[in-house]
Structure formats: structure tokens, C-alpha cells
Amino acid sequence: MAELNLLYLSRADVERVALDMATIIKLLSEAFKEKGEGRVEMPPKPGVHTQPDAFIHAMPAFIPSLRSAGIKWVSGYPDNYKRGLPYISGLLVLNDVDSGLPYAVMDCTWITAYRTGAASALSARYLARPESETVGILACGVQGRTNLEAMASLFPIKRVYAYDILPEVQRRYVKDMSEKLGLEVIGVDEPRKAVVESDIVVTSGPILKHPTPTIGKDWLKPGAFASAVDFDSYWKPEALSQMDRIATDDHAQFQYYRTVGYFLETPDPYSDLGELVAGVKPGRQSPEERTMAMNLGLALDDMAVAPEIYRRAIERGIGTLLTL
Ligand SMILES: NC(=O)c1ccc[n+]([C@@H]2O[C@H](COP(=O)([O-])OP(=O)(O)OC[C@H]3O[C@@H](n4cnc5c(N)ncnc54)[C@H](O)[C@@H]3O)[C@@H](O)[C@H]2O)c1
Image 1 (cartoon, protein in one colour):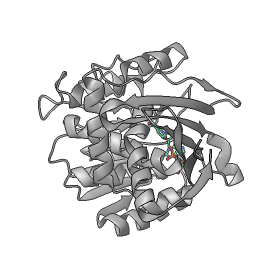
Image 2 (cartoon, helix red, strand yellow):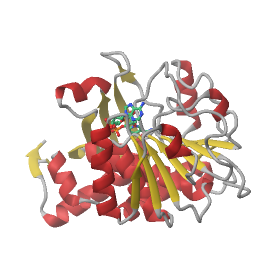
Image 3 (cartoon, protein in one colour):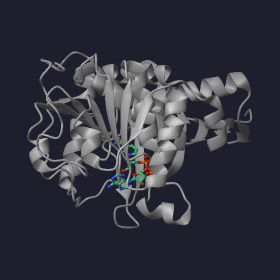
């Protein structure tokens, strides 16, 4: 039998491929349409939990139209920054859809960062006002960066209000993101200032099972859209119940999280992102609605993007061939 190989892509290899945000959003859109039409196989993610508020999740998915099947094995450890380690780390395996054989293993840090921002922007395409031009970012970490980049690729963004509990992190964000995206990025000294003026708000702090939320009723202005990347950790129940529409990315996953103690005060989402993209459910219906995406992060997002990273790596000779 011929020798079987797989391509290994390190974190640096994946970063070198540097897939652009517009392509990532396009791939996600195709995958969510497939999901909305009932063709994706994706069981809710099981996980193990070695520390409070930490997780290691198994995330498999199969997207027939993209001929993509595989699994991400990803961890999130909120205290890692104290040891100079990343919050998110893990590996992703791609399997051939005809033979089941694994053909690629890659670090999943970059893909997790970018596909999450892209999913927020895809939700915003259906739920935010198209002319949205101000963004509030609450937490200037990895997600604060990729979410802004994704929003700026779909909307005519002019001004950004950025808040982080660590002033140094916020200062670095203001400098980096204004240079990278050519936008006016203003650091603000309290969360409220990042919310009240913004057409689009992204909260991207730590996910906590028992949060002490900050954003209250009437902070989000009528007509604004919010993406809660950190679940309901930043949002008070009275702010959540004021939303005219809350969508998620997957109903089953949302209900699973409820059974393990999350989202106890969050209303049931009226739609998931697949239903929005496939046109099964309507998006925003008027300029005054307050809307929100509560995306949980799906294996589907990763499996939409990973084969394209693999293809471009092969084309450019990036990565290391390993024997299976
Ligand atoms: N929903 C999804 O699909 C998805 C996917 C990936 C990550 N996440 C979540 O997104 C969050 C951010 O991840 P990341 O990779 O950007 O982490 P990160 O460590 O890079 O950034 C987190 C930032 O939050 C700041 N922060 C902490 N508490 C804060 C507070 N109360 N107010 C403002 N800022 C605060 C920190 O200083 C840090 O800059 C995590 O909770 C992670 O689990 C969600």
C-alpha cells in the first residue's frame, strides 16, 4: 500500500496563509446556507473541564457542499494570561469525505479568532442597519480585533469606541487597529461610553458561568445591533429582554448550554444563523429594532474555513508533510 501522508500546519504556518476576511465570511455564508437547508451534520459539542470556567471541547462537523469533514479539539483557559499563555489553543483535523482518512492537522488558534469575527459580521449582515458606522468594542483582546476587522469589511465603519479593563491593552488596540484599518479608534474609560453611541456593539470579555453583567437597560440605542461573543456575561437580564430580536448560530447548541447552566436569563433566540442566511427566518424588520447575535461558535465555522487554508498552504508549499 502507498505511504499515506498528512499536512501539518503550525500556528505560524496558518498565519502565513493569512486567508482574507472577505473569503472567510463568504465561506461561512455558504456553510450556514447549507445548515439552514438542513444538510449539515454537527452534533452539539461535548467537552471536559479540568478547571472552573475552562473547557476542552470536541467540535466535529460535515458540510457536504464544501466537501469538508473534520473535528476541532479546542481549549479555553481564562487564567492562562497569568502564565503568559494563550486563552484559546488546540488542533483541527480534516478528514477526506470519501475515505475518512485524515489529510491535515493544523493549529486552530488563528481559525478560531477569525471565523468568530466573521460569524458576528455575517449575523450583522442580516440584523444590523446597513449604514452602521460606529462600533463599540468591549474587551480589546483577540476577538475584539477580529470582530472589528470583520465588521469593517461589511459596513461603512468610520468610528470605533474601545474599552478594556487593562488600560495598556486598550492603548495597544487603539494604536494597532487605527493603523491597520484606517479608522478613528477612540479609547474610552468606561463600558457605557463604548455602548451608547454605537450602531454595532461587540462584547468580547471572558465567558463566565455566573457573570456579574455590566450593560443595562437603554444603554444600547434603538436601531443598534450587538454581537455577544462572550455569551450573556456582559449583558444584564433587563438589557437582554429589551432586544427586539435575538438570534444564535445553532438552536440545539443553545439549548444544550442552557442544560449546563448558561443563559438562564436570556430569552430564547427566534432564529439561528443558518435560518437567516437560507431565508427561512427574516432578519431586521425596521430601523428602530434592537437586535443581537448570541453566537456560540460552531464546528461548522471551522470546517467551512479549514479546507481553504489547506488548499492555499499546498499551493504555496507551506507546512510539513507527516507520514500517517
Ligand atoms: N462565541 C464564540 O464563538 C467564541 C469564540 C472564541 C472565543 N470566544 C470568547 O470570546 C472571549 C474573548 O476571547 P479572546 O480570545 O479575545 O480572549 P483574550 O484573552 O484575547 O481577550 C480578552 C480581553 O478581555 C479583557 N477583559 C477581561 N475582563 C474584562 C471586562 N470586564 N471588561 C472589558 N475587558 C475585559 C482582557 O483584558 C483581554 O484584553 C472569551 O470569552 C472566549 O471564550 C467566543
